[in-house]
Structure formats: C-alpha cells, structure tokens
Length: 390
Image 1 (cartoon, rainbow, N blue to C red):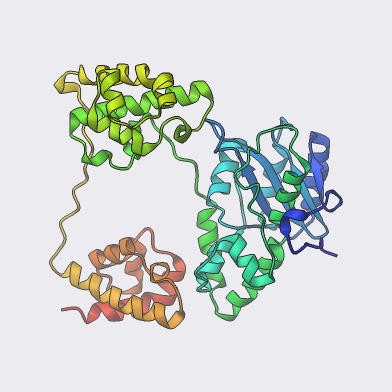
Image 2: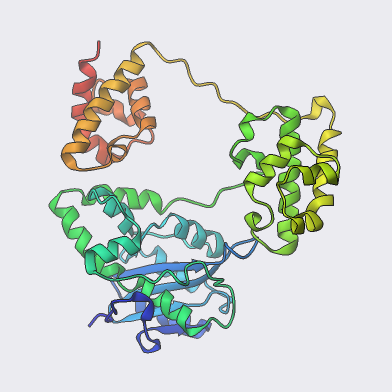
C-alpha cells in the first residue's frame, strides 16, 4: 500500500518516512529503490543562506516508503548515481531544471528516464503549474509553504522541517499517473517524454572566466568606462560574499549595485549620496567599493571592456512574412488545442523555420532545436503554410 498522505502535506509523521544519514543506510535504500519501476524525487538547497549553494536534502518516494537522504552528513553520495542513471526506472520530478543542475553539480548525478510533472501540466493546457496549486486543484491537498525559505543546511534539522520535506515529495507519483493518463488520451505523451529527456541533459553554467557583467541585467546599456566600474563592483561584491559565505543578494542587491555603477562615486560622501546602501552596508562595504570604483576609473582607455553585441543576420525580405504566416497558423492551432502557443512553436523557432523555408519534411532536419514531436505533428501543416507565402 502507498504511504498515506495527509490533507496538509507538511504534516508527515516520522513513522511515514526514513532518514538516511549513513553510507550503509544509503546503500540499503538504493538497493530497494533499484527494484522499483518509478521513484519520485525532490530536493532542498541552501541558496538563500550561503555563497556556494549546496543540496542539503534529497527526498525520494516509492511505493510504500519515503526516504530523506542527508548529503551533508553522508560524505559519499556515489551510490545514488546508478539509481538515477538506470533507464528502466522512471524519475518523477516537478519543475526539474534546478534539481537536474544541482544534482549534477554537487554529485555528478546524471538523470535518465526523467518525467517532469510541471512540463506535463503545461502540455495539458494547465496555466498554473506550481506544485502547490496543482495538488490543491487535483487532490484538494495543501502544501505548507512555511519552511520553503528556511536554512536547510542547519544541523540538526528540526523534525517539523524534515516532515515538511517528506510531505513535499509524497504525492508526485499519484500525480504523475493521473497526468500521464490524460496525456495519453490526448496523444501527447511522447511530446512530454522528449521534452523531459532534453531537460535531463541541462547542466550548471560554465563561467569560463567571462566577465561578471555578462550575466548582469542592464550591463548592455553601459559605455566601456561604466562597464569597467560595474565589473569592478561585481567582483568586489563577489569577494565579500565569498568571504562572508553569504549569497550575493544579501550583500548588495542588483538595483543598488546598478545605481552605484551609474554614479561612479570615488568618495564615501558621494557613495552615501547615492542612497543605494543602508548605513550598515556603508560601514561594512563602503571603503572596499570606493577602492573598486577608483581602480576602474584608472584603467587606461585601450584596456576598457566592451559589451559584445551580436548583429542579427541579414534576413531576406520574405522572412518576416513567413514568420507572420507561421504565427497566425500557430495561434489558431494553439487555441484549438488549448495550449500555450509558445509550446507549439516559440519565436526563435518560427524565425529559424522562416529563414530555412523548408520545402519538404527532410528540410526540418537542418533546424537544430526543432523537436521530433514538432516535426511529426506539425511539419506538414507548416510546409503547407509556407507554400502560400508569396
């Protein structure tokens, strides 16, 4: 019999789950899970509290048990690799992008046979796809959000937090079964399987020593000198955050940093005049930030950074007309299918198809990001649409 789930999923009692804190117990849990056809997975991390985030708990549910694995206590998580890599065992996650990246980053875990219930919801035309909303609407179950933003790296964890984590994963398999049946009825199961498979291959970003401003919103509006100041401030914030073991946003927020970069203050009085920092931040970080600005202002002109700008490729005059024709067809099709139009064909895909202007089905093979299900389901219709564009 499956574990019974209470109406409030944060109220799982200790007897309904097992805590895994030793390598011996981990091996035992993995051996049991390897005999299953499907497991539900969720995790908790500490990105709200530390500079370098870590996976702090891994929750798994299968058939008659829930296990809570503590990777901060267990030094060797390698037994998990075989479980997640086993193609015969379906791994059910909800909104798996962050989890896939985190498990690979921290434990080199590669997930095979992923089934993402959030993607499934989208392909069923469900607009509100957060797990709490889906469980409320589907099963009249209430997720307690009380512990969502707590520090999961603390040890020992309070029992009520562990119980919350157990409840968070306990209903994913029944949800997946229900959603799968509906997908099958609509003949969209292969669509979600392909999307889930692609999602299982996402990886943490590789910094490659590129400037920090490359991932900072608004950096493209700066001229070279301002860009140098912004980069110096970003580097300074990063050093402070690493030193204090705090997330970047808890040192200085992005809006405040942007305001300082625009003002380029070289004295504490001018920095205070920006009103970007609190009094406490001024006392803790003010002098270091001023030094960074001064160093950036002293960089020779020929060594200033420039924001790389990609020129869009020149398009043939008919490409915009083709895009519009595809968009009109897509929006009509999406309305009939009760789907988000971007799922059928997003803006980038419409542009790529219009630029390639396929005349036969095999021409779609030249469009790298096009899914197999998109070719098979909509390929002939797209060809028909494009033939009518003059």
